[in-house]
Image 1 (cartoon, rainbow, N blue to C red):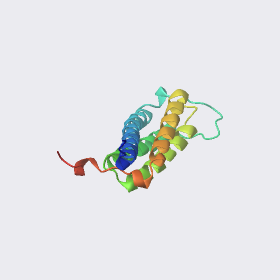
Image 2: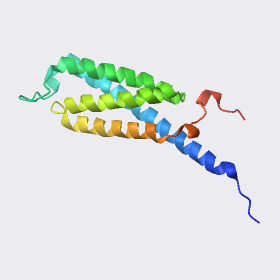
Image 3: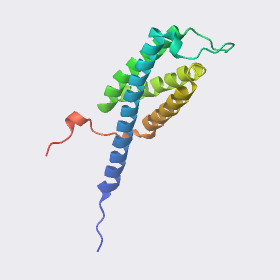
Image 4: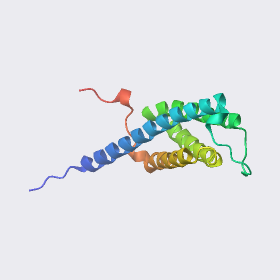
Length: 147
């Protein structure tokens, strides 16, 4: 005689959704911190980065520093909302990751390897935040049942 557990499939999907959202939150937090550091480096000393002539999207490195600093701070703040399971944080997380992709694509000639890495990480963040269905949403960490 076999026993079926109808809740086991839902529980495993919920655990998967929780794990992937926590992954996205951690990656967004790390990406935000690194963008803040890159922004400070671009604002403080323009001679750290290679300057390419005749690039279509040419901006001053100080302007790129402020852009990366702002995106990094917002990404860091949104990552805390993701840890709480907020829907607004998922939406903003996808938006911020998309803006980070655009910013790193446009600043590609100044720091190419790091820009490609951050574009890839941001793509994973977008995938992770969009992969979870509303039915699989997890219970926020502070309201989890106590044993």
